[in-house]
Image (cartoon, rainbow, N blue to C red; front, side, top):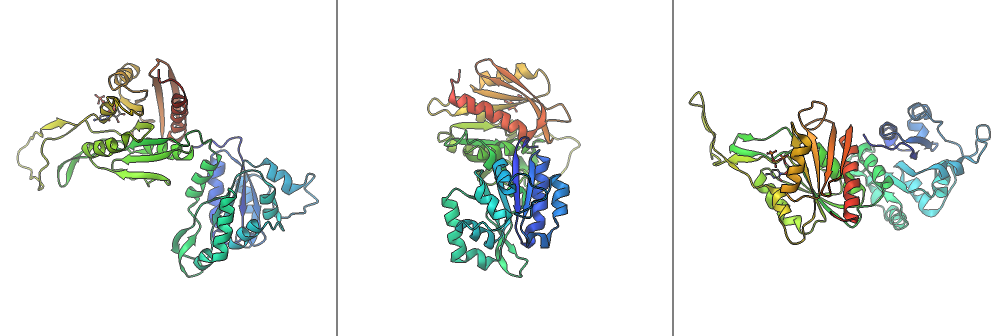
Length: 403
Ligand code: CTP
């Protein structure tokens, strides 16, 4: 779970059929701890009632510019001042046109104009409106002025047309909101993350693998993008969607992962090896499915290359190296040994024997060990939260001495 405690977010909803999706966005923001204040235009209220947003945000919904009964302060100014982030979702062509032209004639447009917070706009409209040169000019102008956009997606539109104009998914807008609120302390850095298991094929239908889901590596990739890094995600087979804004390299086996990692390594500032690489592969991959015959059978295995150790032995342009250690016992001792033997700057040690953390779980707890002998305990937390903690340490390590 992400931590937006102490963050005040204004969610401005304008009048489009996608207004109902703003409800889900509100849920994601409040679940992450944000204090969300909703502003609605008159037309938005034709699609969804203010009561829905009021109930889910636990805050009054702002609809009128001049509300003399409830406002002792000037409503739109105090809201605008309080905001850490301003989101307009869905944003109609009309509202975007008004913002671009400096028209402030209702609660939403007045508050946007008065805020100094970053403004994130998620447009939703008919495809012909979206491609209209007037709209395009308005969007380009706002882009130049620093307004952030989450592009609409292609699909069947409510108006009957097919094309780009559907509001981006609430999860995608939420991710963009997290990015807008993040400190860009990794800007200018290139970070490679490896994630997921590898699969070592025995024949066309069978393979050797492990329980890694890839969730920790994907959380690291998303968090690094939010913090401004260019991210290359080298991933083994997982069920996870590719995070937005990363260069995804999909691999299957350890040897393929090694080739992908080594071809990018020297252009990276950091490599985080969260992947659970299979240590062995079958000596031979059968070309056709083998048939069962005997009661017992033996498959001869050969050791896979240790990708991380290979990175550690680079004597030129070695990136800042972060390994993971999956252990069931002697966590600190084994992890420290791996850090030394593979010549790492930092290692994230996981106890994978516990059911509530590690492999395939939503949460994780870890012991971070550093080259200079320091260590830090991370108690049970979401993989997203742990990713932020790991990146905090990496950002510090990049700015300081590697020890
Ligand atoms: N690793 C790697 N290549 C391998 C095996 C592991 O790059 N062939 C990396 C992993 O991505 C991880 C670290 O090395 O960052 C430690 O992996 P782990 O599985 O915990 O340990 P191993 O080195 O494989 O040793 P063991 O299985 O004996 O504990």
